[in-house]
Image (cartoon, rainbow, N blue to C red; front, side, top):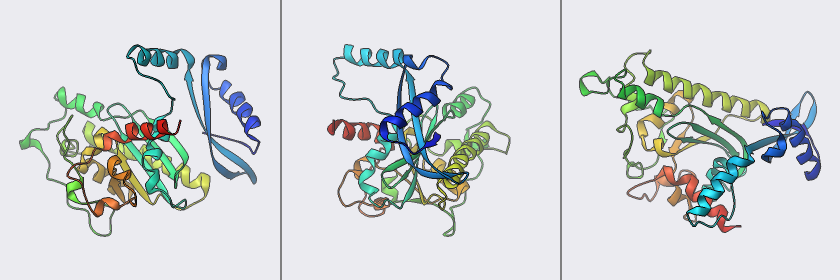
Length: 290
């Protein structure tokens, strides 16, 4: 993200490219650069634009497009995870005053996206994924066997954040570590599993504090967990508890039903939920508009 003076669209693009050129390790002519104007902010008494910038080497993009072409797929457009996530749940975000943090937890990284209603205002990719803990467990450095498991975490009290939604909407983990294995691996404060939870909570917390200080608004109202690791209800609950933010596990298919709200899963619930489909569903919706 960067802050630049308020300009028209063409001048904004030029200002973004000039700034990005100083950060890229390769010539900007060899990059594809796009930006999203997140909103107007004050900095040192001046009104500026907060801009989210995306850059990728042109040869990397072309390699992906060529690969899809060889598979016989028609490319209708290119987008990024953050845009797709917000698009997936746009029908739930009609209240432009709501501040939602999407936490997309994957194997190798965690994507943090914050929106005001359906408008993206923050995006950051954190290079911490569950594979770090899984690999340690495989190597035997973290014990997951029953005899070494710590007691299950106590249920969160009514005063603390918890995962919203009917139990039937929270499907057990069907891949990777068993449900709750990450938390049960946290035997003592020095284990890799507990360290990972502390690290990811710290990184997400920094993102939230940056958002609050930049836009001078109150804290995040709700977190929505997506991605393959969001199937682990205990993991999501641990993060929500640590950050003290109400949360739910996102259901991309339910999100497309009309009339839903961010906590609509507490009503009619499906037998399964697939938070790992959020990006795919969002990209499909974007493709329909192209």
